[in-house]
Image 1 (cartoon, rainbow, N blue to C red):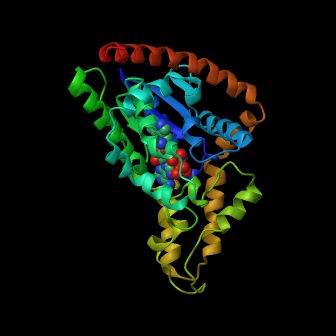
Image 2 (image 1 turned 180 degrees about the vertical axis):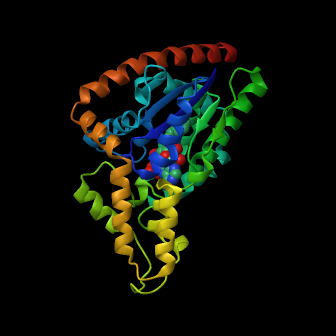
Length: 322
Ligand code: ADP
Ligand code: TRP
């Protein structure tokens, strides 16, 4: 049995980048008979950037609802909230003591985030160690993530390697899995779609608000008549990640033939999103109006996850002489 594990920070509502880059590929893997999947909401990680308690709570529900709306099978697998497993914090301390300081200082994501924040806390700095605990605490074999998280998984492998070198093979060295088709989903401004950049498409919004969001996608300023390069257009780049081959070809031809405006392309993207994700939108809204269902799912999942966490932590501590 291969253990697949991944988490999504509850630092905002899940966006199209999270869905195409993490949720859908991870759920696909979880449907494989030979895999057992642990998917969780990284709410402790969200505290590195969020301070509003009601927002933290709401984001946890929104993130959980997204996983469930895309059909994660919580009976076969394990679905939980990071903060329900206090052992992960204890384990983080031990791993901190095996993590070289320069490794954290050189992390891309720390550098990016700390450049954009005026107030940098230590949690942001040690973020990859908590992530290493999330992974190593459950003997995970495979970690499906977006490209931006690859370095964090590499750090996890290094940290586990340092421990194993000293104490024998007590930790499983995980591998990251990146879906090459959806490497990095661009946001409204063409940069990586991210909650931190305020450039997201929230596919769960009511149609009117979703339309407003899509209309904000930045495009070149060209006249209607001019021929357009689809590969340079943010609307097309997002469209082709969701659409069938035929639909993509059709839109491609409209661009290159000219007499076609970006406004129409945006409307086509809106229709595609509404059509492709109609069931998921419905399920998401149902869950968000019935949060007790989410609470119950997380409670059952946390019990299952905690059992594994306790076993691994105890094995680990014994080896270290604690
Ligand atoms: P954000 O950057 O919005 O804070 P997270 O860091 O919480 O997103 O990412 C959660 C998961 O979604 C990770 O596996 C991450 O790699 C993936 N992901 C986030 N944004 C994108 C994107 N634009 N394209 C592809 N995958 C993404
Ligand atoms: N850092 C990840 C992100 O922002 C979320 C995360 C936390 C995670 N712990 C993890 C992902 C463990 C995979 C495995 O996307």
